Length: 117
Image (cartoon, rainbow, N blue to C red; front, side, top):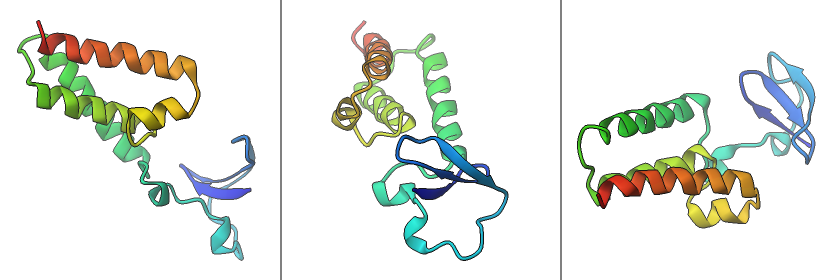
């Protein structure tokens, strides 16, 4: 079980269930009990997630007006993967959540559809 800083410090078990919430990291917690998303190459803060969400929102607004390039669409798809906490599409598929992957595929198709219209 490891501590992870969210809005507060949260100790979660292997299933992700919060066992204890603290405003500050409790004193004496060993460094190996702190989970760091940056070690996994994932997004480390809710601010970054919000920035990605805002960028994707702007992208979807813009594609209503102009036709995006393939490079812009690929960047949007990459941001979508990062928003879901994955490094790429394969990583998202490995996670094994069929509902999440189905939502991802629908959004990816919507992103690509405007490129090829």
